[in-house]
Length: 76
Image (cartoon, rainbow, N blue to C red; front, top):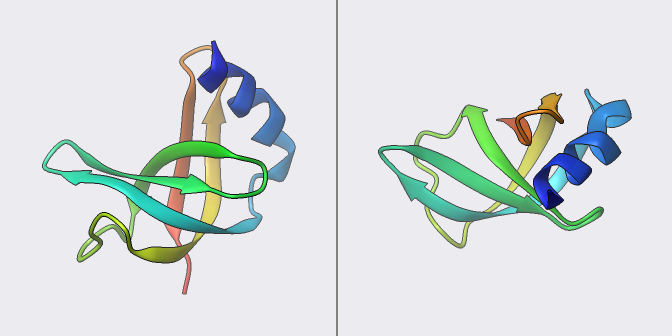
């Protein structure tokens, strides 16, 4: 429920950039948490070389409230 609510809240922000911290990195994916608003999502582009604890700038590229998905791309 929280992920769906976060996806709804962030939907109008697609294209915006956020400061984030890597919270998970494995063969299944790389995850980040943004500070404002607090939300967690998957990095779908530019995740190579990221490790847990890294601070990174990301761009919101997609949300899906039905599935609770929030997708980011690493921003340069």
